[in-house]
Amino acid sequence: WVARGKDNLERFLQTGVLSTNNVAVSASGEKYNLRFSTSQTSQKGIVPNTKLNITNFNLASDYKFTNKLSFNSNLQYNRQYTPNIPDINYGPNSIIYNMTLWAGADWDVDDMKNYWQPGKEGIQQIYAEYQRYNNPYFMSYEWLRGHQKTDIIGQVGMTYKINDFLEAMVRSQVTTWSLFRSEKMPYSAGSYGRDERRGDYREDRRNLFENNTDVLVKFDKDLFSGFNAKIWAGGNIRTFEYNSQYGSTDYLNVPGLYNFNNSSNPVRTANFVSDMRVNSAYYSADFTYKNLLTLSTTGRVDKLSTLPSGNNTFFYPSVSLSTVISDYVSVPEVI
Image (cartoon, rainbow, N blue to C red; front, side):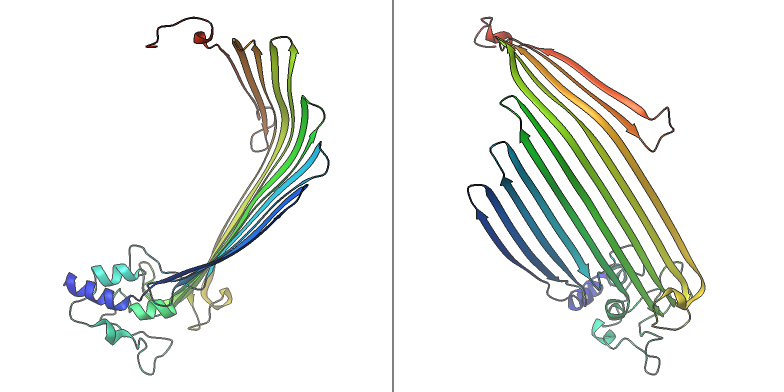
């Protein structure tokens, strides 16, 4: 029984193909560096009528205005998109589950290619049984799951060298992504909890945005003979926003029409929103005496928008003292 199910699965699956093409261009000069690259990845899935495309774009540049003032930036763009990806899960909505665990040994997968019952096209699939499970070709070509996701990561920075021991920098970084998934569940498709087999349409939308902006000052100087101070001090503003929305019909009125207006019963929806802002100030200071003793201290204070006023500010300090004993005391070679 299992062997026949595996044989049907092997004949159902097709040869997958993965191809990647890339173009990169770079240029540099006395004051600048520039690099651009783009790539396209296309994958044909081993499950019929499945594929995934990925487009990448990268841009990196830096420019030196003067010996003291410089600029740098980086941008990464990634988009994944497909009209259909398979559902690998537990239940009748999974082709693998249907064929390897519950498919009968008394039918041939090749008999399932014409998956509509004559005279009932778009309404009733053909399968070896009609209680729970589904025709694998019907699932591949009619039960479609779209996926589109876009990621963008970018950062820019400006550095100004005030003098030999003092430097200031401002930088900002953005991470954002958006996701859209859809599911077109056709008439006569069966899954757990949808026993009437009258189809459904679902959408899942999610968006995230995060920005971190810093101002940082660096100080590195011998204050007097044998005593060095390295001090970093700065501030950060973090902005975080996330939202999601999910909607589903409760069965379809008209077969093959996939939108929320075609819901037989009231549409089921859910949404979620989460925003946060964190204002921070921080420092790091190392004081070293003749490479013998180093005092290190750090501190950071955060103020969060997600907690009640008056109880939303936190300070994180640290202090340490270190010395390398072997620099001024003879120790056995074994140590």
